[in-house]
Amino acid sequence: MRTFMNHQSEKINHILEALPYLINYSGKTIVIKYGGAAMVEEELKASFAEDIVLLKYLGINPVVVHGGGPEINSLIKSLNLNTQFIRGHRVTDEATMEVVEMVLTGKVNKQIVSLIQEKGGKPVGLSGKDGGLAIAEKYLMEVEAEDGKSQKIDLGLVGEITSVDPNIILTLQREGFIPIISPVAMSKEGQTLNINADTMAGAIAQALHADKLILLTDTPGILIDGQLVTGLKKVDIHGYIKTGQISGGMIPKVECCLGAIDSGVKRAHIIDGRVPHSVLIEILTNQGIGSLIEQG
Image 1 (cartoon, rainbow, N blue to C red):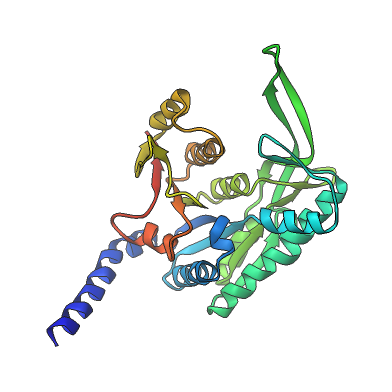
Image 2 (image 1 turned 60 degrees about the horizontal axis):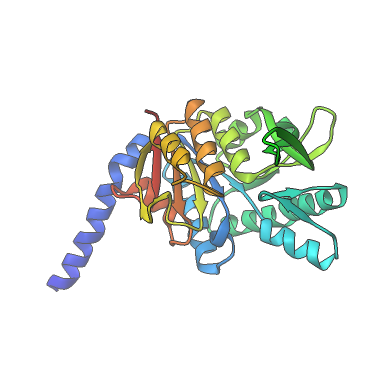
């Protein structure tokens, strides 16, 4: 009996630990970039969907922006299309763009919608093209040539966000829906452009004045000399990039977080999406699970 009662008391303590966070985030918007293993492994997919549904029922407004790189690669391979990457960026011609939009908006987006709906939520699938949500222009990647001079590389139909109109998201939120957004946008000329999902999530978080931006990754968070750093300020990030302690694919993620914070998002998190219920752990517990980036 005592063991049973201790177990029940422990459950209550976890609920009480979450209480101040529930009060603080009630009515607030949290933008979550969903990708990596959390989109592939069945247990993680289910736990993510449960997290999103529970947040909404608790009075918090989650907005999900998702990736889908592995699905795109698989279809491109099966269609025998040539694809090229330059410094981690997919070169996107017209044929590749058709595959990207078909996979992201037509397949992956609807899979996520179905999963969250199965768990009791009210998701609505969108892309950046819907309701004028995201306007973009072609992205020209600046690199340093062998002679030390900078040059710009055309990546094809790859875009960077120039403006976000959040009205369609706000309308859905007021009606109790959960927006699920694929990172495809349109230029002013009506051209469809492929957008990096982290970048899309950051731009949407800025436009919504979100309380949090959370990026799910396949790492524990920001590792400095092999150790997880749970709390960082802007000045710390810049210093670690300069010394090379933050490098490679983590740089665009932290730059995305810094851009969001500079534009009014209060906190940005890079967390381990390989841990079941990582979103709830990060939002509703004292210790959290990944790296928190704040102003300062």
